[in-house]
Image (cartoon, rainbow, N blue to C red; front, side):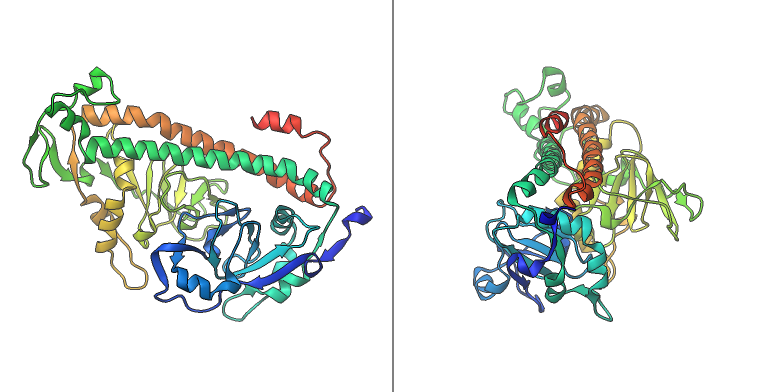
Length: 429
């Protein structure tokens, strides 16, 4: 390693190292206000705001020490100590708990520090976690962390390919979120608001569909146990169109490379399941699932963990496997399962004070308005290409993350220098 890459304590190259709020947050969260990040919002190289909490402006002003700004580097203290990310420009104001906050001095790029901590600091973090009941990584230990601080031009050359890869991964995530939003909007229009039926009842052509699809919808409503519904449709339960297969996967009988999805791998409010472990070392029974099964997290259903399986694998027994009973119902099932209405319904029926769980009985008993199979199939045909695109984007993101993780330790330690960035950017495009 060149002399310019000499390891230096973080305390020498940071303007400030402090800690997020330490204390109870009981009754401090509000529906709208200043974002409040916890350790679970910090993922490797990424701030996940899918389940961000909020605090009042007044409480935020009283917690100035833990106020965050773009460019701050946050390192998780508890849970998964050492997980690190940079606060992005898209989060201009926030507060936090359970993290070490680092503000870099002029000679250190925040992104360089974040990549270094995630790739190279595991042994330091492991050796400096303290606590008998709950292990945590504290500010004093963070100050002792040693890292290379090459000239800024060198840091920028190291960061360029890594940032290009992560920007591409982020674009794929954003694309998946957009695809899911489009599918949800179409589902709401057809099966919740009944927009095509309203249009035909008023003598108008339904918007955004061809004549053949429009012909599948009636032009009037009728009374039902669920209120006014399209004529010829019927009130029913979700279990009418889906089942809950419980194919047992026993320990020792699963190939070790089998994908494993636990609740910890499932994002909140997103059907894109881009994270997974493997069956290697699993010591308890699981359930098999197939590609395009809907996975519904039954533990604390208000966490809203519902996803579309991108591959065949096994899942935690705290996840319900939902499968259409016949072709053509996947889109209808997936959108109902991931809807706020079903999440609210199962949350109200959950059993258990500390660890509330819903059940297949609750999920299957959810009231739905059942369209004819022709309408469900038309919707399925419209959204299935979106689902396949989401799966393809997940696979691309995983390949890119693998490439980044392979390059990262060598680039960040100075053992590898990429002579040209243009070929990498062309490959990513």
